[in-house]
Image 1 (cartoon, helix red, strand yellow):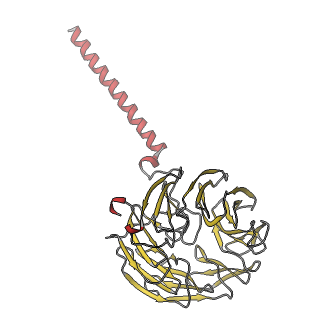
Image 2 (image 1 turned 180 degrees about the vertical axis):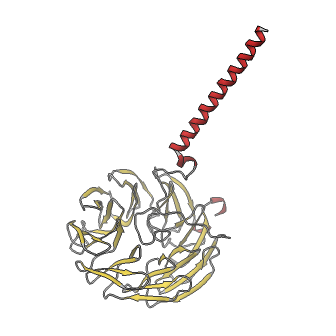
Length: 405
């Protein structure tokens, strides 16, 4: 009887120990979920968040240097190629359609799932930049002198604005669009109506603008970098950056984030400034002249040299992370998707690099996607497909899976 009692007590004790261990394990799992809930309940967050630096019209139109979500794959999508026979075209994606602008003044809407033409409209002049898509509107600059807004579903013109002089590429933030004219003014225009919100004088012939954190950034002809209020146009700060346009120290096309403004000189220098104060943050000198390709995000900045060297720079410190020779590339700016860096090449290839190391991952040749000339714009990247155009007027959508390409 004593032995039987001991066995019962031993069995009961083992059961209690097992229950305690199970409770401890369950408690550890609950703590892990609470502390690291984004591992289980939310998409993973890492230092390489999706940053589509140059496809500025996918989800946050007109802004530069911001995070962008990947393209949503159209329903019933299949690989396609469409020849527009219009020379170089620049396209943007939105609302299940691709909107392409050509230098001969045609705006064409394509079904993004099949590549069939939905509508086409002739505007008054050449259009050399992709349309900006926002709130069912297309924003374009016609012939470099007229800002026009079209209805995305039909192409019908809703309004136009011609300030006099040449217009730099506009950016959009909230309900307004911002741009400069060669006559020396910075404009804010209401998107829904074309109403002038404010006009602020700057030095003559200013360059393009960038927007971030409620501020507009631009470089003036006397080589000053200025920040103005997006709500009033009042100057917040102005810093001299030296030299005149065309010299080594003049910065082109500023790219802005919440914390910094980065620009590329005409020669070998990438410069970053504090977006709140205008103070210098860092200077990076390339070993070869720039070819004008600059992509900026919170973590990485990418610059391309004329001799084909791609530089990856830490956006906070200006320290070089890596550089790699990609001689065939450089016709369009790099696009970062997850941990993969995509480049369009002069021979029409889509090149994929490891963003952490610069190592080549794969190449999709032009024979796979119907292009036979240099890629005419930065690729628009989705989870397993991409959209882009070539300089010979071909527009195409293809799988990123090599076996299907």
